[in-house]
Amino acid sequence: MSFDLSFFIDLIYKIEGTSTGSRVALWLAVLAAFLHAVFGSLQKGRHDPWLSRGAMDASSGLSMLPLAIFVVPIPEPELWPIFLLIFIIHFIYKVLQALAYSKGSFTVVYPVVRGTSPIFTVIGAYILFGETFTSTQWFGIFLLLMGIFGLALYNLVFLETSRETLPIALILAICTGSFVALYTTVDAYGIRVAINPLAFIVWFFLFDSLSITPYAVYRWINLREKPKFLPLAIRGAVGGVVAFFSFGSIMLATRLDKVGEAAVLRETSTVFAAVIGWLFLKETVGPRRVLLMALIAIGAIIVEFGG
Image (cartoon, rainbow, N blue to C red; front, side, top):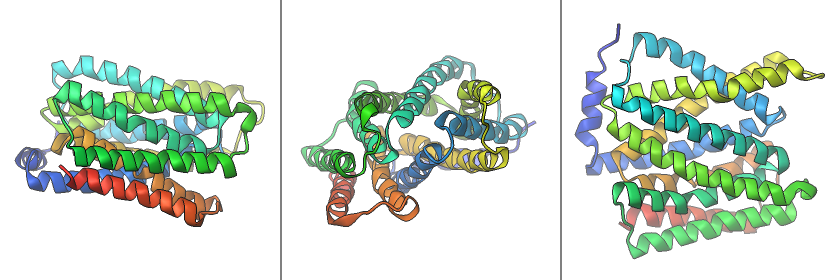
């Protein structure tokens, strides 16, 4: 049994590759950036990163189950090998991200992860989709990366507390960023192959929820001092919703427009992460961080409109 999703599918087919599709992809990428910053802060919050991620994955998987059964069709056979590859890549990314968060502070790790991924994504988009950037867009990427790594350096100098584990945290952050680029490119390929983009997203989350959740349950069982279940469950439920719209938005954006441009725009999430740190973690912003965030925003704008 499945509901008629032909209107949604026809709309995707109609606007992909058009100027309207580009505008929609722009806003989807910005939405993904904001939600990804929220998602990252939720995982790095007061709970163990493994438990937080497991709770979020379990929540997203449970919420996708009725959609997979009653709403969307079963994916076409050619998508199953892609789903397997995506599952492996996302699993490694999650492990690296949780390890990085366990070794370094959110305000240092997050910008390094997000700053590393655009270059790898642009290269991957060129190899897989033949996408190219103009010299103006490369200048925009340069400004964006200056802002992101400048923000990481600022946070490193003034805000970092876990300095004894800092070197390994930075190495893990760079590795995590490379897998962000890898999953962005492979996810984009998968959703472009899929006949039904919504079905691809739903089944992606359903499969993806099976990766970290078993380990999180095992970790929970073996903890001597377990955190209260209800706050963790609430964090997981919120994170599951945020993850669906964050990853779903960027997947649709990469189908509607260029993968590289969408990936670069998503890295404005570092600006949102800094704002979240200021509002909720009581971190000082100051003129230097404002300038660096402005560089990120200006670079993203140049990339979007410099093509």
